[in-house]
Image (cartoon, rainbow over all chains, first blue to last red; front, side, top):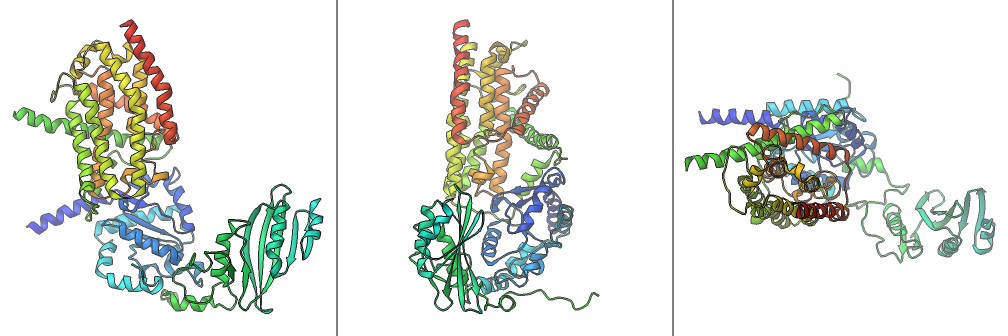
Length: 173
Length: 158
Length: 296
């Protein structure tokens, strides 16, 4: 009985929580240029309760916009670990999926989900604002069904992620 | 115009390419003195310091791009240096913003800069143990496939 | 006794609901002015629920945890002092003076908490908040002195009672009312005085290290803050109200006016904001004081 009450409580909470998602306004690559039209009058993601915030402590979603090189990866991981649970990661554009046009570069990683748990990828170079808003809607569905569990995966498989991070970043921390 | 007088002060070849661009080719030893005279001529802005890898001739070409706000002229100073143990003199005291460009030269091409205290410190590349990546003999694809995990790709479109 | 306890719950609840509604309405209104659709009206409530339901919490020390609590309790205490039609909770003969002191508690709690976090942005934000307070408090205190002089009392309930039948403070001393409006506006920290929480410069200033439940508390405090500033202005210059409906309508109208200014203005630098407050509002506050002293 207690379990059912707790489950019901969690369900209500999740359905409320998904309506207020704050993204960390940290731009790693060129994909960030698609965010301003998504925020402002033309596409207005504010109507879903999605607002950009400036510090990792206050944010729920980390959008990795575009290519991630080694120097950026270090900062992204730090920012991600500073965010408070529950937190979600959206890989944005083909660069974060398989390296994109930087597949042969000496400083750009090719597969983001070996280094941090990614809940959702948006394909395209660049994804249009419609695609971004669609991805937010999809993320809300994932939260509703409990499938957006990247932060839990990160804790469970911490050694795996840490091993991969050490491989490209060397020994740090 | 004063640009024609550059020949008299600079040891090297001065070529007026067009109205607003001068190419100056100097020896390795004369870089600092040439830049010094150019600064006296009013070239007050250092736009870029970079290098070109001429691997077939076993040479690096160091390129300095200067701009004169008063005369609206771009001056490009080029110097060839040997590819083995490349070393140049710093121009940090002439143009303070050259510091970071020179750090980049050391990092990306392995050209040592004498007199720059930051030369050799990691700047853009972190945790780097390979050849400097902008050299022509550095194999970028090999490095990328060795170091960064690639996503498994399907062979057909099923 | 039971009545008092019930009131002690109901009055802050009313203040919170009004504050949260005004916040949501403001977001919707700003969105419409910018030709957006805007978030739903209950968006601030959803934000607070989300923040309070965060699973992690980061603490930087005892004072860091206590900061939002002090800020919130200071705000609730202030709400008890402000005359709300129908309720009378705390009242003393000099409560306008007491109110001036109590209203600072919130900022001080925030300052102590944010100082503990050790983030340079937080320190800059706190320094800005206290500097801005120096700015807007000068004309505000002069305006309040004018009000005290005019009605010859420091009791807020008596001031409200003296303004019945449209003898509003705003009609009796228009210059002072405008000055007090500008000072209230500065205290609310909206554009162009949004120097404290400037996200583009100091990354939300004092709140930079606050997240999760701490930030939830601070947002509740913000809702109270909106109510306090507007209700105080309403009581002092718009004659209070005979029932809650009128009171709410007056606050609502005032807030709409504030939002118009907030939407169209950019941001002052901190020294310009203080210079602005110490120049024209102060001069006009003194003129208003002089008029009341001469004309009675």
